Length: 405
Image (cartoon, rainbow, N blue to C red):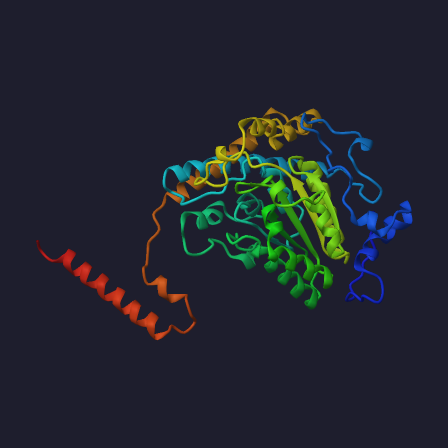
C-alpha cells in the first residue's frame, strides 16, 4: 500500500494528519478515516504457534491492514538474532548469579519483539530502548560487552549513543519516549530522513510521560513509531489493573494516530507490521502505535519472585508459543534452514556468550575521583572540598600500607 506523504505542519483548520495517512486506504476500500486508525479486530499473526504460515484470509487483516511476507534474507537474519538473543539472556542470568552483573532484566520469551524492533530500522534511524531491551540494542549492532556494561554497575552506558543511533537504556519508566520524540522533532526541523522507534512496556502506558510523548508527536506530525511490548505485567501488576481499553493499540486513536496490534511472538508478523510502520513514518504519515502481545518467561529481574503474582500454568501456556521454536519450524519447513545452518547459528550464539563471559569477567579499574568529575561542568566549592577530603584519605591509606609493619 502506498500512503501519500505530507511534510507540512499540521493545520487543524484543514485535514488531520491521519486523514492524509489513510487517504489511499479510504479510496481503495471505501472505509472511514476512523476505521483506518483503529487496529485490526484481531492481532496480526502470520505464522501460528506451530510454525505454520496462515492463509491470507486467516491472518486477521482487514481493509487498510494488509502485510506482505518479509523477504527470506530478512527472516533468516531475524532467526539468527533470535538464537543469539536467547543465549545472551541465559548467559546474563548466569553472570548475575556469579556476581559479574549487578542486575539483569531478562527478555527471555520476548526476543522476537527485540529483534524486529532493531531490524526494521535503517542505518540513520534511531532506536530508544527500555531497560529490558538489551537484545534489541545488540541486534542494532552494539558490541555485546558494551551493551551489558550498564548492568554491572558502571557509571556510564558502555556505548556511544550517537555512533550507533541507540539511546541509553532507560531505567526510569517511559522517559525514553520523550527522548525519542525530541530526536524526531529535531530531525524534522533539520529536514533529515530519520525515523525513531521508541520502545516501552504495558506499564509505561499508564505514565504521564506516555501521554506527553504521544500527544506531542501527533500534534507536530513526527516520524515516530511507538512500540509497546505488552508482556501482561508491570512488574507484578497485571494488565487488567492498568487499563480497561479494548487494547493498548486503541489508545492511539485518542491522539489522532493509527494503532495496530500484533502477535509479539511471531517474528514474521512483527517484521511485516514494523517495516510498514517505519515506511509510513518515513513517508510523512506521522506517528504510529504498535502493540505487541508477548510474555516474559522469567521474573521481572533477578530480584523478583514471579511466583507471587502468576501461576505456573500461565507460564506453561506461553512456553508453547515460544518465538524461536516457531520460527525454526517455519524456516525449516520452507527449506530456508537446514541442520548445517542451524549449527552455524548456534555456534555464533555460543561465541557471543563466550565474549560476554570473558569481557564481563575482567576487573574494571576504579577511580573514586570520578564521583566528582561529571556532576557539574564547573565543580562547586562543596564538590572540590569533598574531592580533596577523599584524595587526602586515600593518600593516608596508601601511605600506611607502604609503611613497614
